[in-house]
Length: 133
Image 1: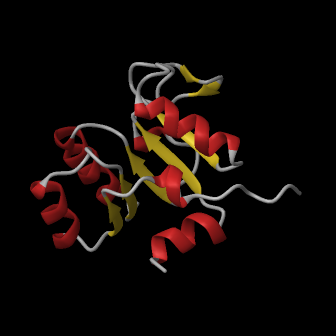
Image 2: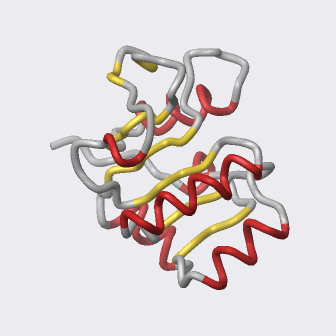
């Protein structure tokens, strides 16, 4: 099994969702709500929102209160590339790029900078609910 899928489901990482939103029809909302319902610890990252589904939102990765275990991208490829540069500077190298959030430039960047990554696979499909404690 892919190491990132194992990390997602076995390590209980915090996931930063880039592009999280309250707009119900957008995938940034669907993914955020799905992961939250499954008990994943989340940080919504969206510079245009103060909250996302009742949770405090952060304008960028540098503003997070702790390092995320996985950075999940639900934004267009140009934004993905720009935010990957920030992630690299911060040492956040485990990334999950949702379908539609990558292009060839994004994949080249990931390969050149030694990221652990998943591209074009949906985190909602690969994640499993957490056990209740």
